[in-house]
Image 1 (spheres, helix red, strand yellow):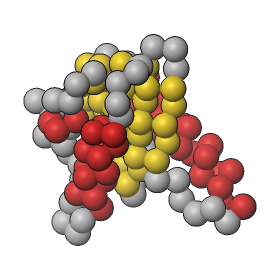
Image 2 (image 1 turned 90 degrees about the vertical axis):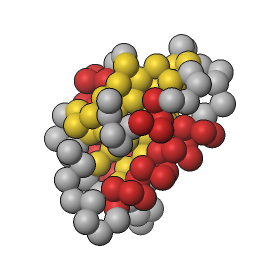
Image 3 (image 1 turned 120 degrees about the horizontal axis):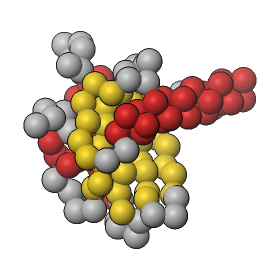
Length: 115
């Protein structure tokens, strides 16, 4: 069982969840799409941060993507990216709140390595 993802994977409609490091590799995962999700969200975060930096927008803290069958919500905390893939049409507020709490935990002193 994933320690960091426990709250997220218990939410209705969650098909997959992942916590990845700055290299795009999954540190923890649950369900479907996780290896691809970890790599692609890390790359997407880097693209948004490169676009935001010269425009003075600061760091990217949350990304949401809606696809034909999935809603993906991701939050960034330091070098980590945590995400949930939910069935499209599911209310994502619970996942957003759980991801925000996880981001806060990861940013606290002593959180160190997510593993």
